[in-house]
Amino acid sequence: MSKGYWLVTTTVTDLEGFGQYVEGFSLWIEAIGGKLLAKDLDAKTVEGNGGHLAVIIEFPSKVSAKNAYESADYQELSKLRFSNSKDTNIIIMDGGVSH
Image 1 (cartoon, helix red, strand yellow):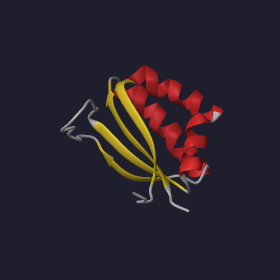
Image 2: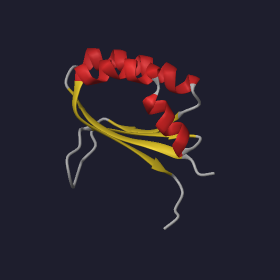
Image 3: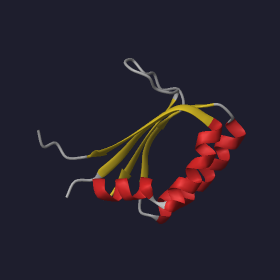
Image 4: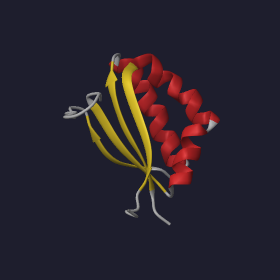
């Protein structure tokens, strides 16, 4: 089974408030078996709309990545992200190369 991933871009609008989100997110992601693979605070979007912060998070599978996003715990935690960032894009994808 392939790994699952979140590809995230966002623009932080309040660094202190977003820091609270990051603290909670770090504890949550570790508790559910996710893994932060990459983070860039000065990412460059060369096509489309994206923020300055880009993150790649790995999960055991695409299903677990989707379930993590839809979980009540993450939806509650994401309120901190919503209020301290803008232009967020989250893509949930399969890590396999099947086509």
